[in-house]
Length: 324
Image 1 (cartoon, rainbow, N blue to C red):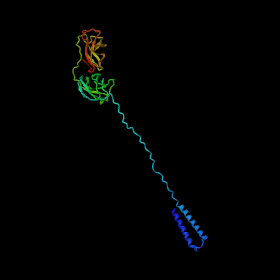
Image 2 (image 1 turned 135 degrees about the vertical axis):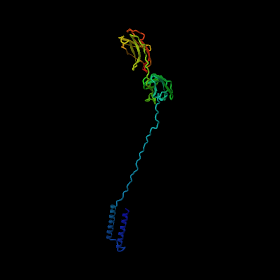
Image 3 (image 1 turned 60 degrees about the vertical axis):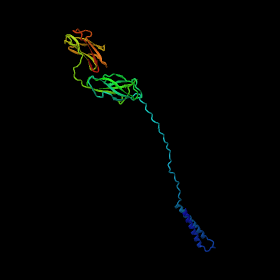
Image 4 (image 1 turned 90 degrees about the horizontal axis):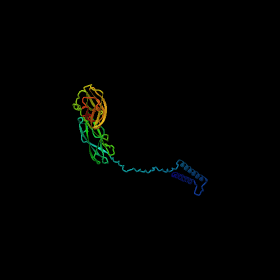
């Protein structure tokens, strides 16, 4: 815009200069020709200014836009910084410490008696009072079903002991034991078998061949029915082996009666053998040794030459599977 104004000023000055040179004298009044020249010059200046405006349009200032990002305030979500709750202590909980004696795999002779001791620790929150050691599963080896445990305070160790008897057959035997609280609930055992029990494991040696000890009656005279021996079958049933002397002199059926610890428990009949035979009485020996008495021909239905050898008394041990 400044450039165009300057150009117009130059043109006006030029026009006035030309006009002054053409005047005859300073007294002469300008003529129409001068007016026409001024008019033409003015029109020329206006045209140039219009053309300059067209060719050089004014620059419109650009209003800058804000490029500043709008900051959205971030709210911090408070986290729970409270300490986690502690777990409730376990009331009844034992810990297996060690085998005090009879390490696993200890060898014994058949029917040998021994004592097994385990050491455990009360790591629960409750003291043990009225608790018992109980047989759980496996081979009991003649051990008691339950054994009372003395009072044990928390974090205190205790030795638990049972008296056992090795079976009479060769092999490996294992019995599992547990602790039962005063309410009759079996408690867990940290470090024990499957975190619940502890066990005793032994090996029984093959027995040395010896003469079989049997309860044998005195040899009977001719025409006599007599007891040869009393045995335990593999299912713990009492059986009596009966013989006749001489062979074939007696016939029919004879009655037998079984007494356990002095009380009659079974009665039945078996045929008189030709020679000898085993008569199963049906009586099963219990978990402890029993005094067994068997009487044959208890109703005296068979005539014999000797009635004094029709009874025999023995002690039968279920775990030894023998009567002696």
